[in-house]
Amino acid sequence: MRNSDDDPPIITLSAGPVDAYPAVLRALSRPVTYDFDPSFQQFYESTVRKTAKALRTALPPVILQGEPVLGLEAAAAALIGADDVVLNLASGVYGKGFGSWAARHCRELVEIEVPYDDAIDPQAVSDMLEARPDIRILSVCHLDTPSGTVNPVREIGAVCRAHDVLSIVDAVSSFGGMDVHPEDAGADIFVTSPSKCLGGSTGLCILHVSERAWAKIDANPAAPTGSVLSLKDWRDAWRSDVLFPFTPSVSEVHGLEAAVQNYLDEGPERVWARHALTARACRAGIRAMGLDLWPAREAICADTATTVRVPAGLEDGAIRQEARRRYGVVFSAGRGPLMGKLVRIGHMGPVARPIYATVAVTALGGAIAALGGSADVGAGVEAALAVIDLAE
Ligand SMILES: *Cc1c(COP(=O)(O)O)cnc(C)c1O
Image: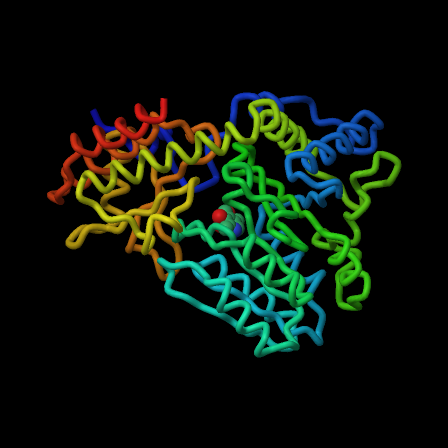
């Protein structure tokens, strides 16, 4: 029995956006309230406070009405002034991409780039900041999702603090699925989203902005105002006694509240643990099938997405298509220069459950075998199960 491209997927194991939790879907179906109705203004304030709690900070985050790239562009526009030298760390497609947004605003962009199956070495960052004391702002992607690799943001954050450098951290695909928070990471702007590990919908982004960053933004004459991407305009929008600068996406805010409540109720440590176990079981299964993980070493593999090298002689699009047609399982493709080189398996939100590691291994291995490649699906499933059972 085949699944046609018109049929909805049976199981989505994408690297985001992901299936939303049922509570989020219910919240999205609530009536759309007038945004200036006091009940909505209070709801908005309590949602921002809950989101701050999830971020483990006392500072209310800014919620912007658009997918997370809006947040990244807004962070660059607000923080980076025309005299600034910015150090961009590029270990993947998103890290590299941030450089193009930073370059619009800064005087000079300096980059440290490593191969996209590797991670940034904090010592290299420290050496660069020693060599270039004029660098004022650093940007780094925590989990570069197209590579499935994680950068050591705590260590990099400590290096930034030591050099009085402000940092922008993209934690879009890791926050909510891994132990990463703005203040532990020393992040001055920390961008994340409900649509990945929080299992929410795709229309909002969340930005933590530190006191130091607000001071820099206030001092930056180029920081936008009178714009939907203005952090300054949205700064106090969380307060129920302050008017919204523009209309917030009411339904998306309902969805965000449900996603954050879900996360806090389940308990963040438990949520991270199931993401980590799912990824660990998946990696064991991939290896046991005779396939190769994309990251150069296990220590830099993400807990929320597993990247698998496309076996020689096969084509990634054909593998994903076969997995979808044969089993109804959806994986993500590579991006940019990684397109065609790897297949991505997401473990985010509702599918960050260990049993889905066996689904991923079965569908990926089954598709590869069906296309004439070599994959020992039985060995893969056994290895994934062994990891899950050992964790009991
Ligand atoms: C998903 C994601 C974003 C948002 O980008 P889209 O590709 O538009 O969804 C930004 N940064 C990272 C690391 C992401 O994983």
